[in-house]
Image (cartoon, rainbow, N blue to C red):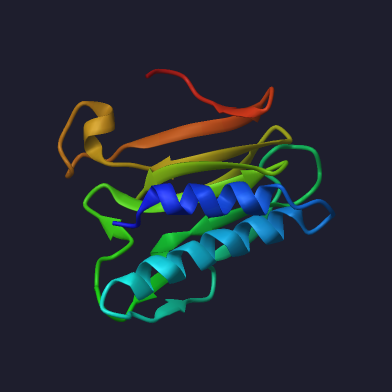
Length: 150
């Protein structure tokens, strides 16, 4: 699994950058951190597949935010470097703030004009096993992602 401490440190640096390319810079910082983590394991080479970064409004302010999906990363030295049974890291960057989730898939849907992020997660989040299907919905409100439940 990716070393999240170095990822967070890289994100902090990227999020300090000013200007309109804020989300792009932060998304690139996530990819660069992943590249470094991959390289640290037997000099692996990171492949970033199409769809690794999606620009879509998840905050409802009409401006595109960034979603970095590590399921679209492949490390030459480890087949399952970025994903496990709980899913893959999904980093959503809104207003320069990066929030990390662990998910088996994601989708943004429109709910009466407001974006909702749906994350398919491990079944234990719904009181079951990995085989149980479970989805958590998040909305951006008051500078954070919000949902019901624990």
